[in-house]
Length: 278
Image (cartoon, rainbow, N blue to C red; front, side, top):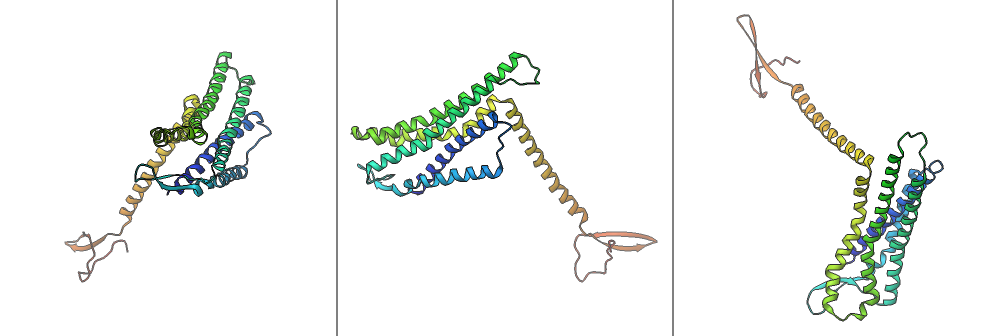
């Protein structure tokens, strides 16, 4: 688990960040080149496949250099990176920082800035609304894009600053208590903050877009109605089975009247009975 867990974390982080960048590029092309751009399902699958393959490959050193070792001053085993060549370790960190933060951040900033500029300067022909309403919708769209970019920037920035201090400035710190505080508390909090960015974007879209809120309510209602329909279908099947099951009766002829006597079970060796459904 010492090798598997860091590797899977690195793969998921790299894939999620680059997926956000790919979504930003797709939105830019869809909005700014509406009539000339059309994303095919096959193309989107190829892009996602390439992102995950890239993430799996670039995260391999995490599985190779994470090892268990005994922490100094205690008998506890700690899982951490054990690079023999510190220079290669720093080069790898810089590469991860570029591929999983800097380049996606630049793409997101450029794409959302161009989208905001296009939305702000675009006129909607055929829409007869007051200028105040149109201006308000443009401001809301630009605010939403700004919030998305700023949250992405500051969600991952603390983690990379801390990692930079660990890789390039930690030799200057001899205080073991500070090192333990950094590794045991500050780094996990920074990692959680960065990972939360992938889940907070849908919440932002719901807060700023009334159409998305309506769509989500429709999805919830559809799921609820489908649940009710499934329950009704199950109950209908039960009722059908109950009424379509074969019941056995004995027929008695007394004083010119026919009397049907139901039997719950058909026992062997009993009197001959007549099934009225035969």
